[in-house]
Each structure stands twice: as structure tokens, then as C-alpha cells.
Length: 118
Image (tube, rainbow, N blue to C red; front, side, top):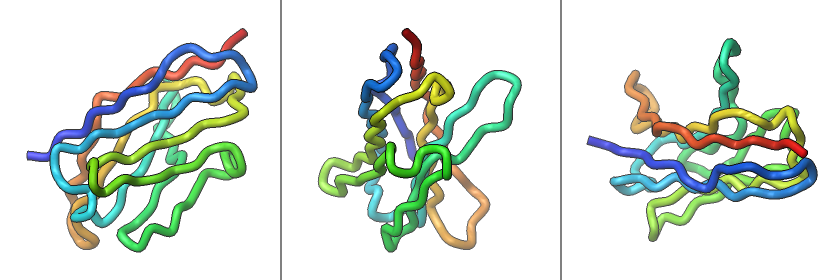
């Protein structure tokens, strides 16, 4: 069973930075894709950043130039560096893993709260 655990969330002022980490119980090298999503209550969960096994990072337009996704295969972690944070970045951030290209199973962490406020 795959487990994903997010950490690094917290309260930060506008313009500040946070670094989120996703710790996987298995090898992230074996996953077809890994992603970061965020969600605000009452709104649909939004894809923020992600990559496939070929590691071609992609980002939502709202975070391009400010967020950077990275991986550390040796430590089985995926990180999201968030710079120049805005109040609209507030939400619960979830780590997501897709094991295979043709499968229907996806794994999710419990989420970590990010609040951007003065």
C-alpha cells in the first residue's frame, strides 16, 4: 500500500515563501506521475504542479514563475517550492501519485494547510 505524507505548510505573509514536501512510502521512481493539488472549501481541487516519469514539470498559469516542483529519488520525496506567495494561494495542498500510465488508481496524502495572510 502506498502512503503519501505532506509537510511544510503553515502561515506566511504575502510575498513570503514556503517549501512543501511529500514523503512516499515507496519509490517515487516507479510512479508514472506525481502532482501537487490545492483545494479551498467549496471549490474544485486544482492542479498546481506536476510531472510524469520523464520529468517535464508543468504548472498552473497562476503559479508559473513562482512555484517549482522537484524530486529526490533517493529520499522518495517530491517538493514544491513556493515563492512570492499571494493570499489567493491559500488552501490545502495535496500530494498525488499515479502509479501507471494506463491505470485508474491514484494515491493521495492527507494534505497540508497553507495560509497566506498579513
